[in-house]
Length: 553
Image (cartoon, rainbow, N blue to C red; front, side):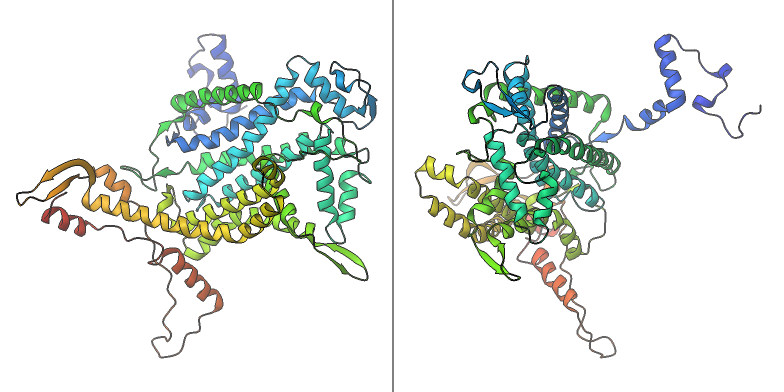
C-alpha cells in the first residue's frame, strides 16, 4: 500500500526516522500524541501569555466555586432521595422523632446527622453556591466598569450574563430541594408569581409543579432541573466562555509596551498554572472554613414543610432577594378584566420588572456600541474614571439592586433596627426611583473630579510634602514630577468625540433631513462624550509650557 502524498511531519514520520521512546511512560505519551495530536496543541497554547492583574482572579473564583459545587453535589446526590412520598422520621435528631415528613426532607436530615461528613459537605455546597453567584456578579461588574465587553467580546458578555441568570435559578432550585418549611415557603412564593401571569399562568404552574400545589412532583422535577438541565446548560456556556477568553485573550490595562495588538504578562505554563492551582486550594480552604464555622440553611430548625404553615424568617439567598423586594414594596393593585377575570398587578408587575432589572445591564454594551458607532476591537481596559457615564450607570444599577435587596428584607430591618416596616417600605418605593438618579449624578461628578486630579498630576507633578521658602519669603510645596510610566498611565486613554449631525443643507443647498434615530444617537453621543462628560487630557504643549516656565512646585 502506498503512503499518502505530501510532506510528512511529527507523528507521520516513518518509524525508522523517529527517536525511540526512552521508557514506557514516554512510549505511552507518544502513542497518545500520535492519535490525538496533544503535543502540537500543547506546544502552541501552553506558552500563551496572560496579563497579571488581581482583578482577573474574580473570574477564577467563579470557575473554582463551580468546580466545588459540582464535586460536592455529586457526593450529596449519592444520599439524597428526591421523593415527596411520606415517611416517619426515626433518626438521631430527637426533636423531630416520630414526625411525618417527605423522603426528601428525611434524606437531607440523614445526610446532616448520619452520613460521615455529610453536614460539612452540605454546608460547603451551599456556601460555594452563594460565593459562586457573588463572584459572577462582581466579575461581571469588573468587566462592565473596565469596558472589557466591547468588540470582540460582546458574545462572551452574553455568555457570562447567561451563567449569572442560570446560577441564580439553579441556586433557588437547590435550596428548595430539602422540602423544609423555609424552602416550601419559597416554592409557594414562586407559584403565586407564576399564577399572576395572565392566561398562561395556571398552565405554567401545572406544568412545573405537576398539579395543584404542593402536589407530589415538585421535588423530583426540581431535582432534575437542578442537577441535570441547568448545570448541563451552564457547563456548555462555561466551556464556550473559556474558549472565547482563550481565543480573544484577556484585556489589559494601559501601560508601557502594552498595545491593542499584544499582551504583556506571564505564560500559561508554568507560571499561570502554578498560581491558579494554589489559588484553587486557597478558595476551597476559605469556603470550607466558612462552612465549618457559619451555619447556612439549618433545615432541622425549620421542620418539614406543611402547606398550612409559613416560616417566620422566610428569606431567600441574597441573589434572589431583590426579586422578593419587588413583590414586597409593590402596592397590592388588582383590576378586573375580560368579564370578571382578576389581574393581580401587585405580583404581575414585579414579575415583569424582575427580568428588566437584569436586562438593563446586560444590554448596555450594545447600546453603548450603537451610541458611539465604535466598530474597532478593544483589548486595552478602561479606567472607570475615564468613562464617567458608563461608570455612573453601573453604580446606579448597583444602587437599584441594593435598594430592592433592602426591600426584600424589610421585616428583618424593621425588627433589628426597631423601625416601622411601613416606613421602610415607603422609603424603598421612593428610593427605587430616586436613589439611582442621585447615585448616577454623584458618581459622574466623582469621575470628572478624578480626571481633573489626574490632569493636575501630569501637569504639576505629585505633592512631595517638602516645603520650600523662596527668596522673597513665600513658602511653597515642591511637587515631584511623575515618572514616564505614570504619565503614560494617566494619559493613555482615548477621548472620542461626539457624533455630530450632518449639515442642515448639502453642497447644493438642498436641505438634509435628519431622522429621529440619527438625532437620538447624536444627543446620546453628546451625553457620553461631550464637554460635560469628560475632562480634556493634558497636551504635551501644556506640560512643556508649565515645566519650562515655572518648574514643579
